[in-house]
Length: 382
Image (cartoon, rainbow, N blue to C red):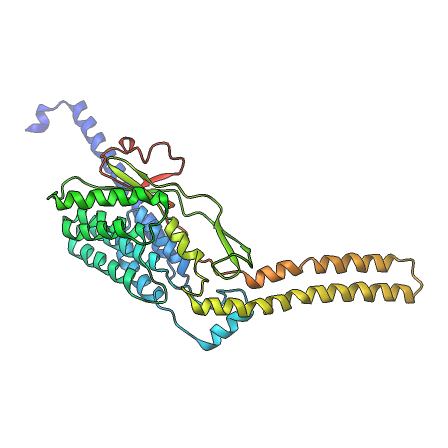
């Protein structure tokens, strides 16, 4: 009856529209599924840094099932330091980290808990998200091989607790962030100020309502190092980033906080107070590295003396001697590279993490002043 009331050309148009919408929906599904499937195929838990990077990619690509499936497994397998006398002894004679599996830093265990909690929240599993946030406290405070809380994970945890409507739990993290002992730099006064305002607001009876938005800025900068035998607090290494971190920023609606505290954990990895074993191995490796570097020096000198001696004994015209000197000097120049290669510190870390986070209550990105004028790529996480 209805088809008689609709003209034939209109029915054809409607059918074409339905077919087009169906094709577009199918195309969208094809674009979404291969991304997650490709990430899952690439996951290999034996390559720990690559696994962490892929889990970060899975989260930004909204593959939350992958994050919850493999994130907990990675956190459990990568969090414990397994001591082997053979490996620990052999590692003294080769560049650091050659034989030793990477162990998550405390901030990395914490951030993995944040990704797990946010993924559960995205798929509507609030109780599982709360479990992960409570696990975050355990990861930050448990005195494992790597330990210590940090402001970034406390900030993200406070925001997630508010998203879950648990203002009491959120207040605890805002209070920790306000009173965190590591926030000693002058620029961190802005972080203390923002966290203090949130504690005051919650104490005044504010209930969860306005939604928080979390943005990731850029990517954690690459690390570089030099030998520094005097004035260094991390053994004889001077560790730095190739790019500077953004300063903290506070507005009426949000806060920008860099991940410089995460870099500080990597930079202090060789200090005696944090890792006595790494510190001891580092100093044992020093004379071994010097010995290795003397090998090309001795070999180069032998080539020069031997070549010139043969040239003189054979009444040569100096051609062999000149060539021997050139080859010997070239070999001796390798000595500094051999020394640095032997002493190179283990700077492995979770690479694909943001350089900074912005948490804001502004509904539009353009309305958040801590996001405007930033040259780094910006991606919304939550």
